[in-house]
Length: 483
Image (tube, rainbow, N blue to C red; front, side, top):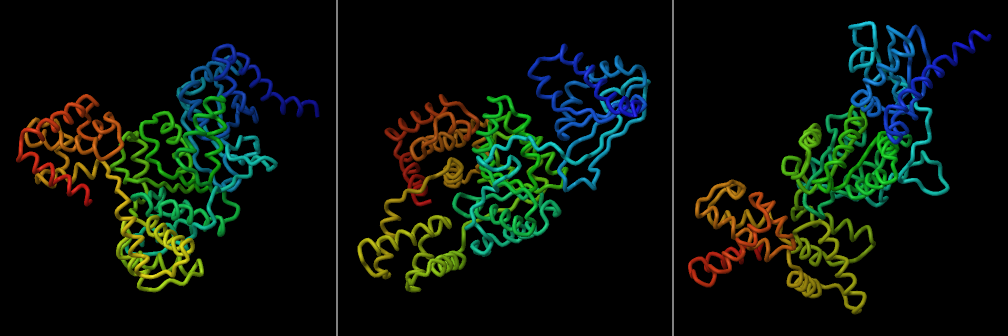
């Protein structure tokens, strides 16, 4: 009995001796972050098995601390010492060995840079900090952060969204088990990206109640990441997100320019994708047009399906209005519904907003909902609503006017017609958008703010001296205002 007890604790004693050496050779914060969570499991024939919380944890140890692990283990166990990693995964995957790394022994010491083997075990550690924790509930409880109204039943199908909706239904039926991983949904604001992404999450929870589903905006993710750095618990942050079965990240374009956030998300993405978990991402642009993003992350975005939500056509707009009216139990003349569907074209949000405004006008002024009231309201909306142009739209309209390819504005060409078109695009971007000079310059040819300021002054001076140029500028301005 004493011999058995001695064998059982030998691995703990050896590992504790290793920790004493490691602790004296690395910073205290690093030691607490990367070594204290490790658990020694067994020691058999000079093979020490340790348990680490995740594949990311294992990869980091291999990248940063393999030398000190190798030398320390050799000192404690002698020549022929080996290290085996046991990587914690979620309980659903206890029957699957996701990957095993094994290398032939090149020498009689711990091998260079790689462990001899790595196996998968069920997680017994329930102490991971949940950034969505609700006071009074268990830490492992994860609120999906889903809006119950955003269901597939409330998402009207049309030519503009049929492909994306069908892909969403396929994903919700078999999360992580289709070719649509990640499912990357992109399109302009107000077209239903958030609604569709959350509808997938709701459907998954209904069909697979045991799965952990989470919807989070990119800004929320960035805030949590920053907070984890400040509180020195990045490890918990990463482990939490690695637990998720279906992760929905809204507006991933917000990651642009945030290299450290992107790097952390890259590791989370890899872990979830390799573990057969489902990722759903939304953006205002397709992956190929995203700026300020790490190329290796962009390549991951292209692995699955990138599907566009486009502006709703007339029939879809009509169906959306009828669904909203039926759901709210309203009575609105069909001619009014058709009039709204004909004149409000930009997106679903504006369409529903117009209907709400019409109901408000009718209720507050005690007026019957008629075609005349609808015309009066929509005329006010058209007059008072100034479309917010994007820099990309301005560049396209300017280039179309001069029969130029829009890509030439991004070139270093000094041809007169290209320089002038580039300066016009900068001029209109300054006048018709709220973007800073620095942002305008970066979008138009990768220039700095002084170049934009110079372009603006040049165009202003030419307006006063060149009548032909003034005519061109006026024509472009009208096209922009009508866009």
